[in-house]
Image 1 (tube, rainbow, N blue to C red):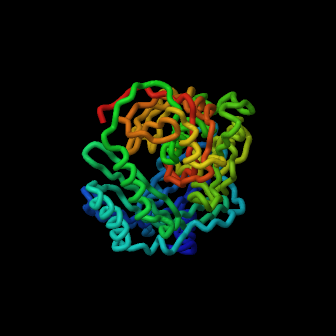
Image 2: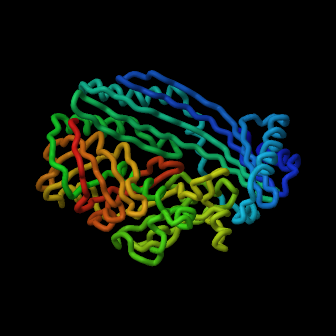
Length: 445
């Protein structure tokens, strides 16, 4: 860990050297540790320590960005010079207004010492618990256990300086037999909240219960989507339409829908980088403090997220959702939440006369962004439900579904939620019981 004072000195060095009219410095320092396992044995332990510097130079309405991973004074000077050279070669961007001005940064505690100090031996012990459970049941385990700590600092020539340390731990496993598999995982700031044995038991249970799968015909079914599947679905929905740039370019399902109902009344989705039950971060990659943004409230389209560029185009303020420049994706929510309900998954199961239990989705891709149609496969635990009970495993199916339509057909929502890693940041969601979910193909496994 470099700490805020050293990060600030490095940033000030760049700002003092730059000849640009405005300059932004984005600094990362990160340590990532990964243990991978397959065939119920650890086969890879890797560790990476790295630093990165991104310099954004502004000359009038010309903007250039250069980056490197060397904090020596010589390297910092070269990156700064390169950013200026690139800016000089760029065409003017008439929509660029300015880098952000400083604002108070809220305090967020996202760093857990126990996670930062977690050892390879401790990761191996957790993996061993999963592998032992698999062997006892004649199954084979694979997966990955990551622990990481990082620091980010953002500074610019208008007076912005923001610094935040954070940690994250993520453990996932897939446990297999010759004709079945089960998935489980957990994500947290605090590695002590990850119970490897519990994760192993969940995945083993699914792998055992999904043996001898039977094929069913494609069609519309009532489904219970576990939190893993809901998190994947919400991440893609966010990518497709919760960015101000997507709205401004007319490729978002939110465009021209603000104030209108687009899902069921029981659906509320928001982004909150300050909520400690997610993976919080108090500011974005421009150093703008995070704001909670209610994206869909009680089924009504409310808002999208902004960075300084998209906010300036509409005369608004940034909501603190910028990605590192240069950024063709525009702002993105990285701290998504879906409102919990009041039911348990057991109550959901008991309510289904005929339907499917889906653990997770795999290989998801957009088909029609404006219509929010996604396609993908079920994986690692798909079960047939009859008369309120799981009657056996089914072969995996391909879904092709309008996601807003699915969120209009949600009849039960779990009281418990689960935190999962998203495209970047975290996604905390409940499980959902959805009617008329569309499956368009089947597999041989």
